[in-house]
View 1 (tube, rainbow over the protein chains, first blue to last red):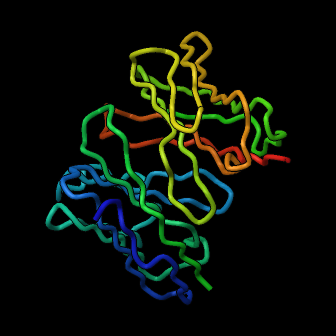
View 2 (view 1 turned 180 degrees about the vertical axis):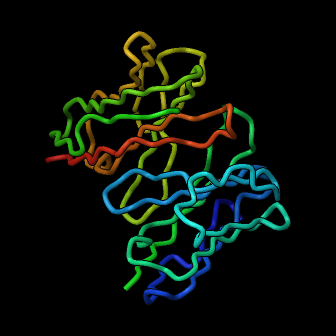
Length: 114
Length: 114
């Protein structure tokens, strides 16, 4: 596709439920990032892939959060046993990977945990 | 570690007036700096970027920003506000030594009055 695609756009989960959020990056983009944006705040880094390798997961808030990109293209962010504090917009971004290149963002998935 | 501070979480301007959004950064390496705009329920769109070339950077929609190393600032300006500029604006610094992950400021919401 022409841009970064994320699905679903909206997700309501009951507390304790597992969720999976999908990101389709721009074709050919080597780097893929996940960010978490709480209401009224700036996005915060979660994790980074270069192709299929997860090079940085320092931003994942707990071991309930897991991300993968098995074939170096589509990525999935999984949250186990969701908690209310997990409610946020989850943004995916991709780039060619060079130092000064732009990261293109998807529209995000708004997760609400009730 | 890197950080970004945006002064003023909300800015109100009259249509046709100057828009000035302030951003100060902290970085242990020469920074790459970005301004992104976010419209409601949308992802982030790049306005402009500084990557160590010219210190005055021009972006889309008539915005520009000036990198001032001595002040560790990267303020965003637009000479004449338009109603369509109402959105949230985020300043970010890229950690190019660690995969280009972005550290964002808290954002400034711009309201344009007719």
